[in-house]
Every structure is written in structure tokens, then in C-alpha cells.
Image (tube, rainbow, N blue to C red):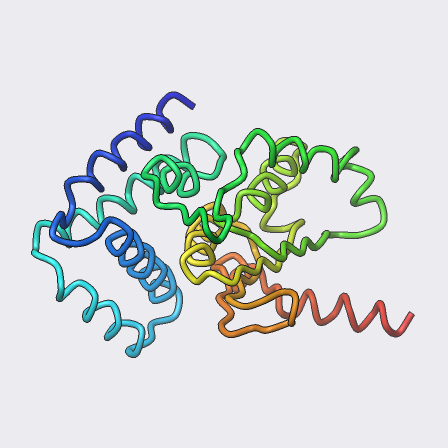
Length: 229
């Protein structure tokens, strides 16, 4: 955990040195957008996404473009060192939250406790099924989903095989943060930019583990079987 905290500090220090000619919130949004595109294009290349990436980085000086890549490296290393909501924590430490929209990310300890209470005896969850699904209607940076994955992993169940999630947030920035962290932590599922209350789905991003695990087929087979029975 200590090394993860060091990566958080390094992220914040580097971020504060990056592109000081722009508002901090704009730099963070651009960092998230570029990181999402990098992860998506690493899986399935799309020229339209690549053009968007190039338009964003064209507004930055060369050293700052390098810094954006290094920031993602700190996220990767921080999540590898210890489970948790890395991006949510640095977002709040940088005081980028929007208090007028109630944009405050749940602490990891609270999310972990809620996940433990919800899952209970993990082994019993799989007594009659191969996997469970989780719906998170206001996912923020994905903290609750990451906590569920962590509890499963600690119990000996690999999240990419035993958990599929549908995580939604109305804020594209929060959804982007969730997509990055769920992707890097090997969680299978979809991240939806939209409104859960009106069932609006403006954009859907599937994590790498969703594709690698053949989850489209697994879900289709599961739900068709459930209906038939």
C-alpha cells in the first residue's frame, strides 16, 4: 500500500507541473480522454478515435504530452501495488470535484465494507452459477465495482472469469475514469455514459476483459437459458 501512495503523490506532483497554461480540470479531462483512447485503440484500432487523440495532444507542448503518458504509468503502477480507487483519490486530492453536482467519490474503505456485506459468503454465490453480474447505476470512478472485484479476488475467484459489470455514470469524465480503472484491473463489463433513471445510453465502452473473456457469448447463453427454463 505504501508504494501505491507513493505513486499517488508522484501523480499529483507531475500533474501539477503539466500544462500550467491550462485550467487543471481541462488537463485532467484531456488526460482521461487520451488514456481511454489509448486503451481502446490498443484493443481495436479506430482511426476516428486516433484523430481525436491527435487533436487533443496537438494543443499541448511536447514535454507535457510526455507527462500525460507518464501519468497513466503512475495509475498502472499504483493499481498494481494495491487495489483501490486510484483515480478517485487523486481527483479529490487535486480538489477537482464539483460540489454543485454532489461529485464526491466514496472512500475505498467504505466501498470495500459494502462489497463484503453484499457478497457475504463468497463461495455460496457460486454454488449454482458460474458467474455473477453487478449493476452500478452511478459508478463514479468505479470504486464500488473495484471493491467487489477485490473481495472476489481475495476469496480465490478471479473477477475476469466470475464477475461481469454494467457501470453507468451521467458524467463522461467519471465514466472515463471508471473505464480506465476497470480495464487495468481486468474487470469484464461495460461502462455506459448515460442516465440510469431514464435508461439513456449515450455511449458504451466495453473493457478489454469483456472481449478477451468472450462475455458477449457467455451472457447471451446465460440469459437465453434462463428464459428457456
